Amino acid sequence: MKLLGIGSRINHAEHGKGVITNVTSQHYWVTFIENGLETIDIDSNFEVIEAADSDVDTVSFFDVERSLVNILKKWSDVSEIVPIADKYKGGKLILEPADTNMKSYELPIDTFFHKITMVRDRLRVMEQRINASDLDEHGKIDLQQYITRIYGSLTSFNILFKSKNHNFV
Image: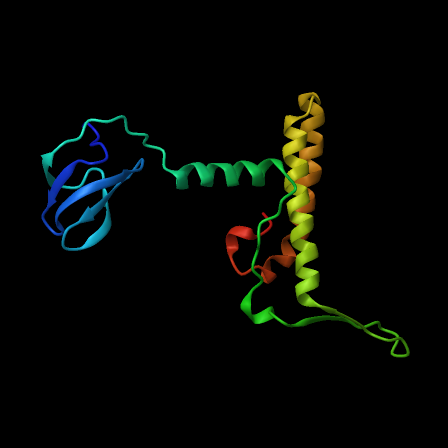
């Protein structure tokens, strides 16, 4: 299947006649006379009225941006914004000593959660740096086992994360 270039005119069964204004790896962005701008799958059924031959870059700006963000997350100390579970927003962590003569310690749970996510992010960066280091395989495996144990110790804090894909595993 040959990709259509920007400026190609099509007739779509649902949207009517339109002109392709952008092409991504999976979609055509088409400005339709009746319905305005719509995205349709590249393999959609439509009639080609006039094909414009042009070099089409099938990688969209969105795809490039997403790849760059993933690379930055993987190789830098930049941390993503990780939301806390709704039920803990604005809450506080209270540590009460067994000795009733001593004062309890209160910490906003948001502050505590931020510190936990920073530990997680720094562990991820350390893991990437170990994998990219000049250590021999045995040294890398030893350090990876320590990191795995640290992740295991931190799984008790998974209850604080809003989304399970942010959990310690």
